[in-house]
Image (cartoon, rainbow, N blue to C red):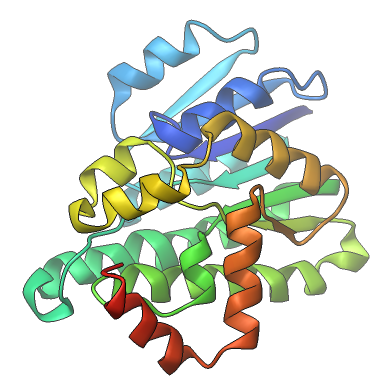
Length: 254
């Protein structure tokens, strides 16, 4: 029986870094790389020590989800690590982004993540782990980033509840809540108006975020915060009313 790790969003950014660090885990027999860009996945696979399988496609595509389920059922696999790193965001007024784009954000960040967890859970072994990538945006509503922030709030709530449900099965679900990082996601999400203020605070280091997340999951923690800023944002979200925070965000142009 093969022991595997499955990583979505593996072709770039946080997902790619997770692949590199997971490749150091000698408990695994194989790593499954999931993303749309096959060429990038093949290039990444060529630089790994573990055997890999490439599961190319869009995580929101029912045919891709069906293929993943069938692939798992075709042999006896045990999933040691599942990392849901595929994510999408778009900055701007809700009314201006439009139905199609807003809907797709929800499909990727919420629906696909939930479905992948459902598909993979039957194959998870004792002491297995799930890492679901959220964001510090999960702690607070954000005007002009409304759907993304709300979708990450879902990821946080869902993951913490699932972690509680799976405790008796010795499966840990860790929610990773980083501050913005200099990845393709940040550069392409349309956050130009926020970029300078974020840089003034300091972008998080991708390697550190991943290292901390894997460490926290090994310690069976249900959340991973890898910077002082992310911890401070979480604290602020607990102390101050959200309407007040939204007003402050508007005043500082964030």
